[in-house]
Image (cartoon, rainbow, N blue to C red):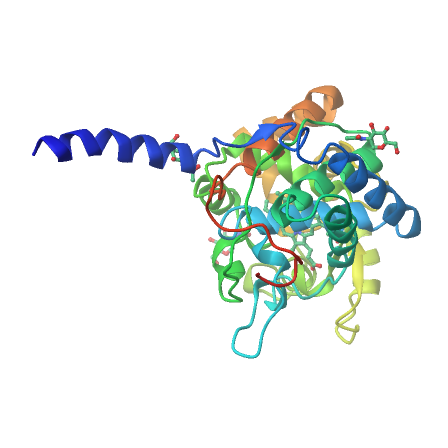
Length: 324
Ligand code: HEM
Ligand SMILES: *[C@@H]1O[C@H](CO)[C@@H](O)[C@H](O)[C@H]1NC(C)=O
Ligand SMILES: *[C@@H]1O[C@H](CO)[C@@H](O)[C@H](O)[C@H]1NC(C)=O
Ligand SMILES: *[C@@H]1O[C@H](CO)[C@@H](O)[C@H](O)[C@H]1NC(C)=O
């Protein structure tokens, strides 16, 4: 009896420590691998020079890692003979960019400080450095995540928002990751860079709006003409449209400006204008870039702390594609 009374507070403390991402801290590698952040930053900068699509891929990689089993690098694991992994799920397998860059950073880090940097942390730093490269954004990244050992292809479709979602559905799924509706609107600004395959929006927005045979009336008609030329019914499954057609490689508030003119690409993007609270957020972000940039960094830190493995949980992988 006495023993169990003593144990309960410890259990509660332990759970809250684990769940809130405590154990993560800024400068986590300053003693164990002082050059770590610099090495990752340089690797990302070099990759962006070769391919301006890299920041979008790396920022999305962190998002898709964190929403599935927490930020534990599970998205990086390769499929094996008896397991199809997250990266080969139909939600993730459209875009192969990013994995090689994480591998390159990891092998440089292993050469310098073997067994120290987790793959999950490399993804978090690389997302920050991507935001710097694409828009000059900066935030202090907390490190200390450990790598998970499980990656299942069925989990991304169960945990990630669909492009057909309305605001209630978006808000609900972000709430399951401890993120608020405001965080959701703030983070959606990542759609100011990168591209989407036609399959992710053409049915909802161009051809069968609301189950009928037409285009979405909440899409600018000229924009719809342009998109229909890219996403013809016989277009290749590889065909893509830019998420922000005006400044497609610049991480900025142009995404929010577009939404106010019915120039959002995904149904879930334009949906932010169909709700009073989220449309208010959109207008504020469009008008005050400095505020949005700060909020974006804070929301990325929050997303990056969700359901992480810390301390002695999980492992530090030797190679990001394989568990030890
Ligand atoms: C709000 C709910 C969200 C939905 C429904 C959503 C959905 C999508 C879809 C369907 C695509 C295009 C995939 C394709 O067809 O290739 C995409 C791309 C992208 N998403 Fe999201 N997303 C959401 C939130 C986020 C968040 C929170 C981030 C990061 C903070 C993010 C970052 C990106 C980026 C950067 C791209 C472009 C990827 C590239 O060009 O490589 N998205 N998203
Ligand atoms: C989410 O937030 C709730 C309430 O603050 C907290 O109890 C829970 O531990 C958090 N979960 C995670 C995984 O961060
Ligand atoms: C990354 O490198 C750029 C120069 O390319 C520098 O301005 C920036 O401060 C660096 N970021 C970090 C986190 O070291
Ligand atoms: C979509 O269809 C439903 C049912 O047919 C209707 O109630 C709703 O108003 C429609 N939505 C729009 C935006 O047209």
